[in-house]
Image (cartoon, rainbow over all chains, first blue to last red; front, side, top):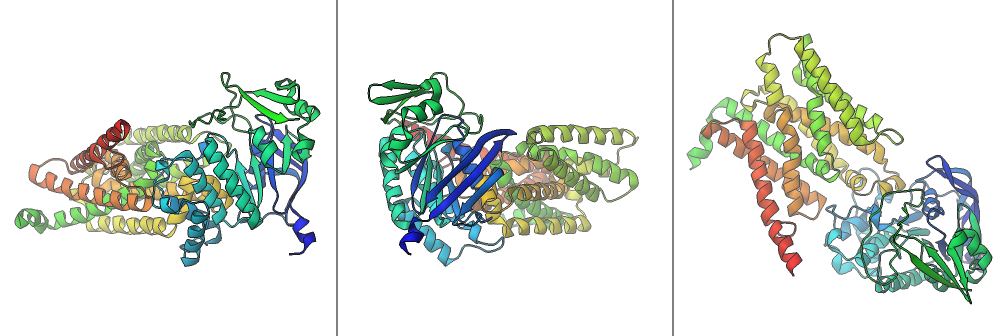
Length: 292
Length: 281
């Protein structure tokens, strides 16, 4: 691959507007993600992070604007963009093994009647290995820890052999160890040239571990390197009164259920509410710090 | 012992009863896996009752009662699918509305008939001992159709039940699959009418599959175990009915329930004891 092709845009959004339940949830978003880049999508609850992902994979219709994947509209079969859902969206009591779930990533490439073949099993084995969960393949998904469950769904997404990988709130509800393990996996994906978009509430991880950050609040407020995005102006625009500026630090005081700040692992369940599926939790306060 | 086992089936009508029981036991139990996993127990119950107007109309015009039931079940299944489509009412609301309407229509039509025929009570409460050769053929053909469709599209039904979002992304049409599942369910309920009757069909759709759920960790094995539990309950129920002179449909359901209770207490991973031990560890 030539240098110009490697630097070329993998995913391009031009004036994308998405409505959710009849209300506009994302307005006129334009951004271009270079091939193999890793982008953190941040913003307050209901900013449209999940809406953006759902529009990209065709779960929500794009009202206007265009999405281009390698200069072409994304394929209908979902083979090119893979999506790892939030853990609340999965039925963990369903009787499927780790191997079954990862194999589902191959179904898009199989016809309605075709059964998975040797080549599919090979891809599944490779993806299980990649994420270090090969020895778990016969376990039911409900028997796994939160971090292991996340890796299963990441393996399933990789089994789709995607160009673009979307991770919806992967740092929510997992402990520090699982977060570091995930970041290590993302670093390996970079070598495979897979473009990654990660939505997160974790501003610190976004600022320190991603080369590109997109700040959303119903529209794109800022996009670029973390230092150029996390400015007082942009943050007050995104978070309004929730952004506090204390000598050299920006503190975002916002309720975000599902975020675990103390490294403890526990599950949250909440009603779908608004485009981001996040109900405000009147008791849960979180502080995110980002360097200025 | 051998004679005890073979004795009942020297009679022709008992042979037919055995075959019909096995077909229904296996079929209800296999499709029951999806009923249990997709929390459609209420739907099965509703569909079973919703066939009432179809049976009444068929009776009034002198048509085949099973055919009437089949048409009614499919009409109601499609109606539920249409009303609960994206943007409509919730599925359980749609079920509630159609269930009540169909039941009312059935009662209304039946009240126009002065005398209840035994045919009509049989189709409502089941009479496995009265299965004719024609009924057996219809039951067998419908069962083969349903099981073949489930087998051919197993991976699609599994995906759509577990993760409709991924199914949609992969172009597997979860909405179409849901319609298909409703129609298969309607066919299964009609098949079950003859043997266990309307009231007990819902139990056969749920109980063996729930038992299998407690014992397995994969959908395919859950369906296989469910089929075995369903077949065993059906045959054992028939023996109970022969030797103890009790209603066969009720015996089948109670045996299935007893097996469920055993699994609930003793299942290796999900049973009461296993969970107790786990929480103590």
